[in-house]
Image 1 (cartoon, rainbow, N blue to C red):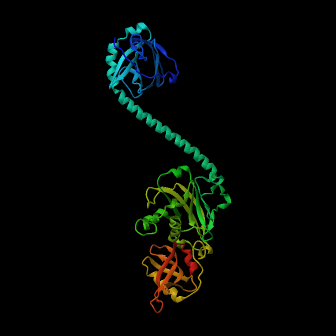
Image 2 (image 1 turned 180 degrees about the vertical axis):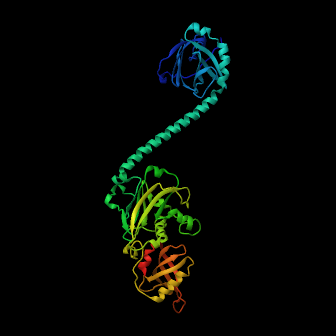
Image 3 (image 1 turned 120 degrees about the vertical axis):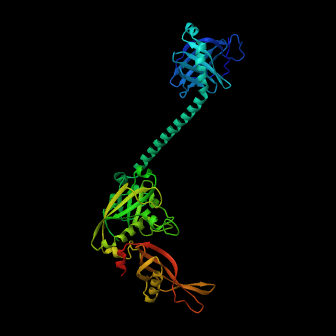
Length: 471
């Protein structure tokens, strides 16, 4: 009789607890107890239990008992084989065929070999046609390694999927808490765009109050922002955030400015942030008329510029006393410069054109009071501005310095400069306020009469109604 030594560690302490059935073996096998006499270290019975994807095998001799715990290889299939369980570390397994007979096998080297069958009683065990069963099933066992690999990959996929689901659940719980902490205004108006005539931080959304918001405004009255209470779905939409302003049938978007004026080169929109620059968490704050000291820093406000350029494109409609519906839409595009898209969030506000829209000292026009008048210097600056091929008209120039500022170098004059402001129209049709300075070089005996550009402190689109206030 061929004997099979199972050199395995005893796992009795960690065996899964479920019912085992006693089976008689068609051939006795050696248990492999340490220091045992081979003649007595035999097991003629096996205790086998299965439950879902687990199985246990117990063998006993006079010297010891050995328990083995196995996992089902669900990726394995073989003709006539119902289930196969295997312990990859100890290289021992059992298979159950469609006739309800168990077979014990072990891997020796690269070969899986069936050693014995197990029947419900002694007679049944002896009547098993072991040779033919072994011949039928053993070749199929050669696919166990591939099945183990496939099952490991499958288990990895399942584990990753479970981890992903748990992460999504965790994020959903965090999002729920975040939304609850956003305060009553957010939770009452989530998914909507509201309007406010002051700067409101995106950090203190819980402090928002209904009385902060307006449904109509006078152009030039004060600052004006669109405040969007973003949904998680909107936040999770892939792409680049774009903001579109519409009056009547005319629209301008922030990314449209990049597409038309700033994809490459030194254009002001070539490398600036998108409209999402003012978006944080679940709230977006998009300026149309910025509050004081809240406008341009190191980047331009493409959102605010888009609104002002829209005003320039509908300037003939902006007559005193007129009223207009202003629509603001948020949506996503695939790439920088893309500007066509279906609105995902929309808000509307009534815009009134009053005398306030002509106040050049308002936030809308961003101008400063003239300090003095000097028609000669003003004409020099006007000529200098109109010489720029990007400027088509200079509407007004005024001076912001009472006297020249002289720059000395090593004790001698280098140049003198004058601060000024102007409202101009560009070749694109924009109405722009320019603020900066011009300089007059020192030629050794006096200062030149020819003005040269010195510094540009502000170059900003404004409303075309500012022209009326500058006259």
